[in-house]
Picture 1 (cartoon, rainbow, N blue to C red):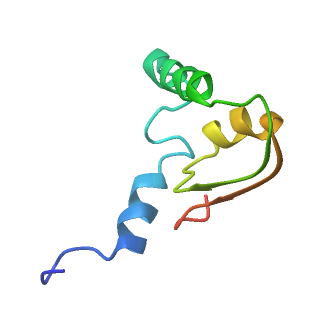
Picture 2: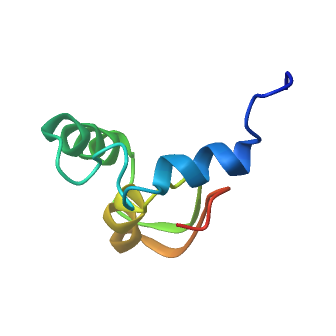
Amino acid sequence: MSAGEPTPDAYFDAVYANGDDPWHYRTRWFEARKRALLLAMLDRPRYRSAFEPGCANGEMTAALAPRCEALLAADRHSR
């Protein structure tokens, strides 16, 4: 990081300052389409466990959860 560049924590604090969906995962049609395509590409209807790193606000997590017995989703930012 160069001088004056925000830390990752500061950057994501700023990004999420205006709400919990700064990338509009809930409202953009193409985001819903990406989730649907990802789910369609999975080769089984159910999984014993899954891990979703970088889950952001959890939109994909919510879509994936019904297909998993156990799902661990994590993100650097707590929102």
